[in-house]
Length: 428
Image (cartoon, rainbow, N blue to C red; front, side, top):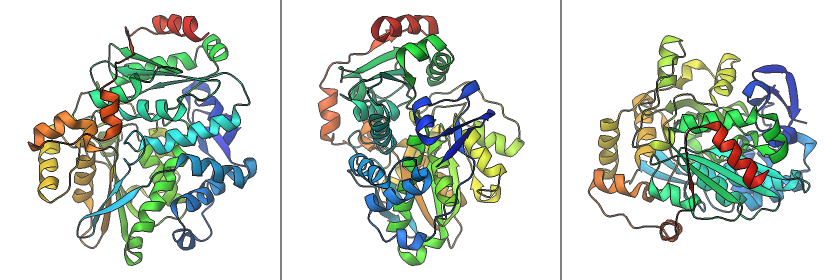
């Protein structure tokens, strides 16, 4: 059985099923494994298909708490779309994670978490409360849409995510309830955390979080790093340097878990936009978040990343070597220039992808092999991509359909008590 301890309260130790149901631990701490055993034969795993390999990786991580056959069925339902590795230039590849229903990497974690809760819920009422800086909202909304006994409440910063991102989740209705908050993503996140400290709300609503703080989402993301390395030419697998566009730091945390399992990851780059709390911390050893700045790469507009304690735990306990972990920030003008450079070289990258590319190029050894992540389809940032690159972007059908529908979100002031009243009136 996988045991997870609360990184802010060592006394709280839970199983995987408990961690998925609870979401956040005491004192708003995140759950994390006390140890991870390496996989026995990674080379053999890399020869399997994506779903088969992912089932084995997740069964190994979770242990015997859930039958292997159940995990295999959950993975088959959740991962019904590919993660594609595309060669961009010599020894540099892009892992495209936007081929799911909401065209973003969070489809992997969101859909696996929905499978978990559907299996674990046993008919009890559950309310998913989550904040989104862009893609989480759509992935979670679509993953849980129409699921029995589950309501979803999504908070997002009004006017600070792209219209395409917003319409993918604010147009669904049914069991999906959305609020446009007057404030930043961090303000939304703070209200979510406040709700989890509110015992009455937790009990009456059966509260759970679907952010990347939920361990089920995090473990699902481990799987596509194995898929990336599996698609590399076998002679290049030992040198893989992976660059992850980083905001809440869940994605790079998953890459680090994959490395701990024995995946040959030589180096990791966690590249941020101008919200540079982590790069500054690694340079100065002083944790000093600034106010969150709006940027082209809005899904990374996070100055207090919730997953950093997990990353720090792995670094401090030598699960991954500090010397092989890089974090740089990329400014707005540089992001635009990199988008143009990558496009001129024949690949279309939206802002988050361009930042991951730049982070990789900055640290890639001359004999290294690099993989940078593309976490969202360029059309999700149609306005900025078209303006920066002076091109016309075709709109994929899921986005075109969503954009044609009316927004059903309610506006909300940045006040937890107002949110509390709304939730009790609607769902209590």
